[in-house]
Length: 617
Image 1 (cartoon, rainbow, N blue to C red):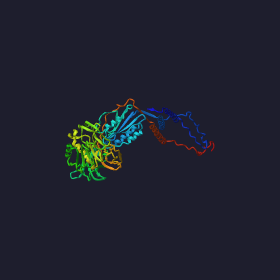
Image 2 (image 1 turned 45 degrees about the vertical axis):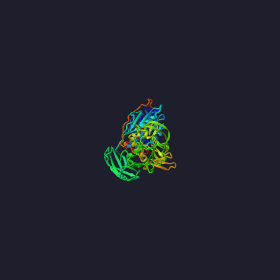
Image 3 (image 1 turned 90 degrees about the horizontal axis):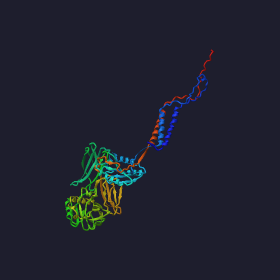
Image 4 (image 1 turned 120 degrees about the vertical axis):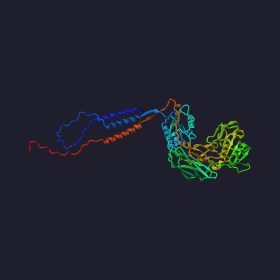
């Protein structure tokens, strides 16, 4: 322990006068009387020749010395020196996944991170990285603890999984040559292992509080052959007792069914219920009075599957592969090119003409509006598929080779399959209708002989035909919503909170989808009128409901130099508070101490009868 003002310790000499006061003999009290005659025969008064007496240690003396010592220590400003938790540059990685909502893990993590930020000095830099489905840097190289506190306050818990590997990569990307960078991971560790463990130059602050939890694991709507719509609800029990849990289903704000399920601990229970809804309707299910430790997974949403397309018109150069694909899909017919009632169009090569319906365009000449042809490329292979894209679910194009393809540039269409930087498959809009564009001829690739081709074709046709049902897109929370603007206006996205967000027409996706619920996507024209509207459903990730927690393997010191900064912690305020408490105690003891009775200081003494004189009768 050291002192910032050691000279103040000299005030401890005040203890000497205090002790001297306790050693002085008390003075006699002065009393006024009517006469001294009655005291003539009394002995001569004696007075002490020594004014001092032996020191008597009393509780009051000890308390007063303690109060004096505490105040002297507080004025000397005692402090302790310790190694600072913050380095030259510290990156706080905050996990906002759904499992962090269990037993208020996220709130505790934020409080701990605020404690770290409170230790900042002018020489220390702090950055904050949000570890969600799509990690992002919230603030970088901040010198102000208030700025870091605002960044932490802006974080919101999501219902999806956290990509900790990407969040750590972002934190590593903030390192600079002149400043070593440390990572502090505020996370429960999650279920999936990281791409690289142990994590170098990192510390893991683990949060593993848990409790019983019931969750709506899934909610599906399906239509049977008679046209009856049923809702399939699955409720999981994560560690809770086997008891009945209530479930309510509602559509358009009206509850149409109530039921009870009793899943066993660690198990699930399913229930079917008739749903009086039509195509494109959204149904919400919620647990009633579950009283569990993770309320965020007590709700789920679903919509009717997109109705099948009945007819497709095939145009352009005749392709046996396209015709075979259309004939292989049940209840789908290939309409004659002269028929205008077909719901979809497939245009293979040739000129696209006037696109007046959702269309699948295959290397047309010229490309549709919004695409610029800049060259031709040969002998390419698929190297990238857009993650989380619904039209590519369970579709693997690995091994697909293309002999020749167009090189396309675009700011309006969304590439979903690429070879390096060359787009091969794009999604977009033409004249307000959904469109798929292949930059290569099917006959100039091996795609048509792969098992993935029929599945990809079915998904593309279902996606094109999805306009009639509102383009419902179910995915886990945190998954981005693809945006396919026509380039004539803006996009308005209204999330579960009801607050609309305007997105530019050049945006490829909407990424603020961490909150579970229903998102309404509206494409606006130049007059801000709605051209087309779509729905996107984002539900809580079932893998997060169990609240898995594990200790991450880390290696501290890899990026940390020997020149660690140190910090001091002053204790003066605590010592002053102790002194004030001792003073109150001393006052209380003094009040309760017994006091000797005092004689009156004023008044007359009652005269006594004079003694009789000797020698007289």
